Length: 288
Image 1 (cartoon, rainbow, N blue to C red):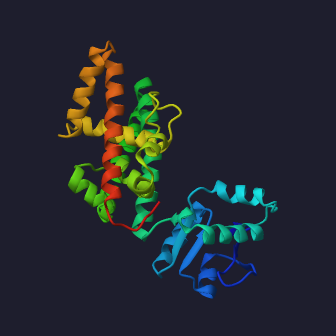
Image 2: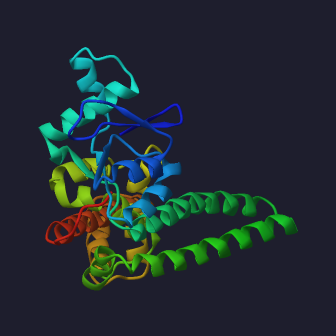
Image 3: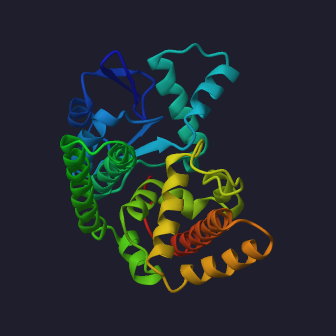
């Protein structure tokens, strides 16, 4: 299927005729499909898709959405919703492994949505903290305290919901990691953690560069945040990794601040490696 002009364009597996529907519900009711393939699913429709998933429908998304436009261009096909569904059908039959589930259960989607909100609010919390240090006005103080309290409540809610996900619970039990940052990474990246080789994961999470937060993607920032939290809370495994690298970098002449940052990145890389090993060895239905 493909979305355009507030309509849903669909092409069934046993037909070459494109059918147009008003929405996903109408499509599901009339065609009763078990698998729906698309290049992407708009955020505003993911809730509806989660409800439809309860009826047994699985939504598959193209791993690399650029493949659609590239294949269309290479074959001289004009851009249109009708042509896009035809190209998607060809791509899926050519190599089904180029697609992966958008999510497996409604619980997956809940954690995805909550962690996306948390990531946004956490960045806002840093901004309000900076503003708070610039003024002691009572309203500014109240805004900072209220925002911090609500973000903490959201983190608690995420923990309860994330524990319903087998992979998160397994990671918590075997690696001793937890929190919204971990929930975000596992709900958004579990399939890449399972399928990508380690060297590509290092690139995906931007662990090769040593720059700070500027220019990093959300997944990279949250992996670093997870590493910093593990060190702060003296995680038995990752705090030792941090201590060893911090002493090494400091002995090489790095300042304490620079040695800390470089050591945190090493911890982040170790966590990524452990998540990769744990996820790869876990039998699960992929989600992203």
